[in-house]
Length: 289
Image 1 (cartoon, rainbow, N blue to C red):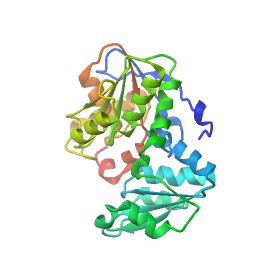
Image 2 (cartoon, helix red, strand yellow; image 1 turned 45 degrees about the horizontal axis):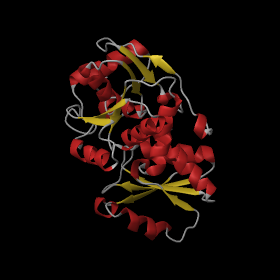
Image 3 (cartoon, rainbow, N blue to C red; image 1 turned 135 degrees about the vertical axis):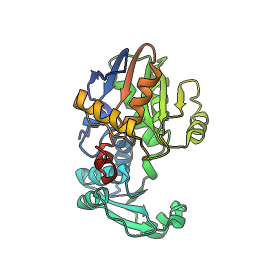
């Protein structure tokens, strides 16, 4: 994983999948690092930089039992020589490959009830309020530091595409891309494919950021909700992997690919691979592969 924040770049390559027409490229952010990949690293990189600049030595964040963000934070912390801790949303004991891997990288997991989890500032203050070495990162890495990291994707592109399309759960990546487009003065359109049933929430965040003229949230591709899928989507994901040799998953990138095929957008476009392929190896999906 590169530590050259301003020069982080993974080359584009043509995206060739049956049914996806037009001049489309894929930004292989999944190649940044096996676990700290895609938008996870983009969102974390400036959080880590700012923590180091302030002399912090511990990253503290929040997430659920299947959070790519928790795992990415654990791995990135270990690589950068930082301790990590996370408040885990859990009303009962949980054990899975995400959490075992995070603990392998040295992350301290602090299970809390779903009710307590709603009060994140209080949780951080209670456990780390007197720890001057702790740097708090919002759930999913959200915030201005994340936007700054994601904006770097636009600056690294070798051309100004007509559109960028990606999987979106919180609109953080979409906002970062929109800000990057503004900074570069491009006329690129961002299509954020909502992968869970929070279309209105994401659209509200885009409006608050003043990016409605640049970013459009696409609804109708959640396949029932977060981590929900269908036989048709699973077949499509398997076919896309076989055709390209690139791992896609049914939680994020598979849904975005489906939308890309469905929309048949005009012009020269870029599909952003946002990483998160660990979801493909969850028992739920492995049984259906």
